[in-house]
Amino acid sequence: MIDLGVRSTPLERWHVDGVSLLVKRDDLSAPALGGNKVRALEYLLDVGPVRPAPTVLTVGATGSTHALAVATYAARLGLRTEVITWPQEEHAVAVATARALAGVARVTHAGSVTEAYARATLRRLRRGVHWIPAGGSVPLGALGHVRAGIELAAQLEPGVTPLLVAPLGSGGTIAGLMAGLAVAGRPLTVVGVQVVPRVVARRGRVVRLARRAAALWVRRTGDAEPPPRIEASRLRVWRGAYGGAYGRETDAARTAAVAFARAGGPALEPTYSAKAFAVALELARASPGAPVLFWLTFDGRWMERRSQSLSRSVARRDRPVPPGD
Image 1 (cartoon, rainbow, N blue to C red):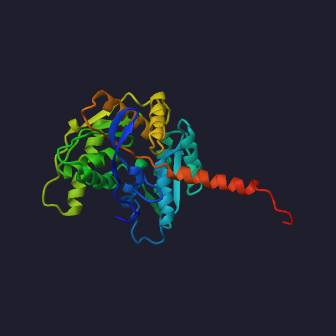
Image 2: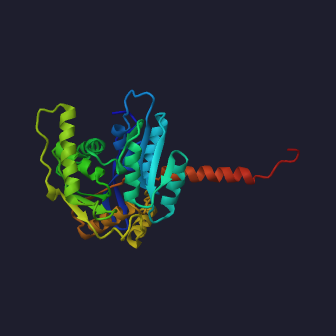
C-alpha cells in the first residue's frame, strides 16, 4: 500500500428539496483529486521497487474518471500511463474528463469493450506493464473501501442503521463497503444503483467480490478471526435509473443534480453520482422516518479548477496591451 493522501471524509446531514438525508462526502477523500477511485489506487498503484519503472495500463470508457485518476496519481509517482478506451454517450463531464485524460496519459481508442480488453491482453504480454482493471474492481482494490466501510461504521451514531445508496458500476466500491461494514460489525443494507450494463451490475458478482475482499483484509491484517459473513440479501440492485446506455443522461438525474447544487452541494455527474442521488432522494421521500445515506463518489473540484484556469488564461490573452509594450 502507498500513501496517496487519502483521508477520512465527513458524514453530513443535508436538506435537499424538502428531504433530509445523510451524505458521505467521499468527494473529499484526497486533497487534489478525490472521489472513490483514489482509495483503490493506494493499493493498486503500489508497483514496488521495480526498475525500470513499469508503464501503468488500464481501460475504460472515453470519459472514465477511473482512467483519469489512475493516470493522475501514476504521474505523481513518476509512472507513465496507457489507457485503452471505448465509446460512451457523451455529456459535458465525459468530454471534460476525456480532454483531461489526454493530457496525462497515452490514450488509444477501441471500437468496443471487447476490443479494448483484447488489445489490453496483447499489451500485457509485453514486459514492463503494470495492469489495473477497469474501475480497479478486484479484491486488492476493494480494500480501499473496506477501510472506508470501517470508517463509516465509526461515524454512525449507535443504533442508527441507514439505507446506504451508491452507484453500482464495476462493483469495487460497494463490495468494499459491504466487507468493511461487516468487518466493523455494522452491516447495512446497500442499494446499488445500476449505472452500467446489466451483465456487469450483477448482485452475485458484487457479493462474491465483497467476500473475497473481506477474506483478503483478514489475511493482510493478521486477524485470527475468520472473515465476517456477508449476506447477499444485504445488497439490493436498483435497475430503474440506468437510462438504457452507459453515460446516458436522465431527467431524474439531471433534476437531482440541480436540487443538490441549489442546496449548496458539490457537483454531481450524470453517469454515476447524479443517478444514485436521484434514487437516494426518492427513497428518503418515500420513507421519511427511515434514514438514507448517499455515498458521494464523484469529485468535481478538478473541473472547477480547470475552468478557473482556462478563464484566467482567456482573460490574460484578451487583456488590452498597455501603451509602449
